[in-house]
Amino acid sequence: MYRDCASISKKIAQLIFKGDENKVPDFYNNNKILLLVDAMDEAKAEIQSDVSRELASLKETCSNIIFVCASRKSCIDKYPISIPCYAIKELDDAQILQYMKKTIPDELLEKVEQDWIGKNRKEFLHKNRTPFYISCYVDLVCETGDNDFVDTTQLIEKFLNSTIERELKKT
Image 1 (cartoon, rainbow, N blue to C red):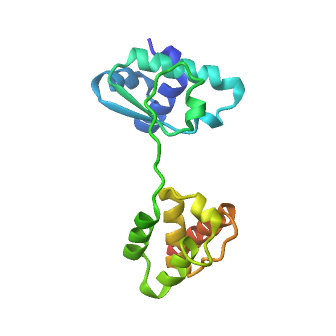
Image 2 (image 1 turned 90 degrees about the horizontal axis):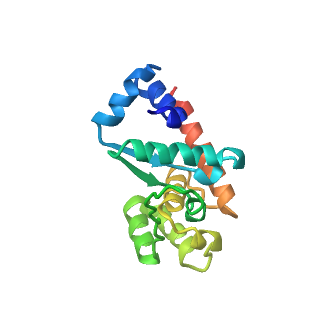
């Protein structure tokens, strides 16, 4: 019954049942499940049809699974399974500033405001107004005081390095 969604079932067995695949059908049938499908746009072309077939089989077999997709809409349209898609809305200047005022120390706030709306406005920040980029930016500035980035790649790189350094200090 579940052989058409074998890869997904095997992963569930590994993650939840210590590899016991016999428990997976009961898990599907007896639980309300939210399956977050992410990065479908990153699936290799040669396996996209397999991914699609498994998801379609799982959706058909298990009516109590709610599918939510976190991939690009252009990618979802090519899969034959119907998955609700939600867009992450960009924040406007007022929302961004409100968030910053709540999270950034006063001594850094003026410098940061200039990046978003002032004379030093960084265009790459203005174009990346989703909560993810704003949170990375705010966290990095609060932790390091550094707001000197030239693009989103450098922002993310500095954010990740800062996060790794902080976590290494804990060990």
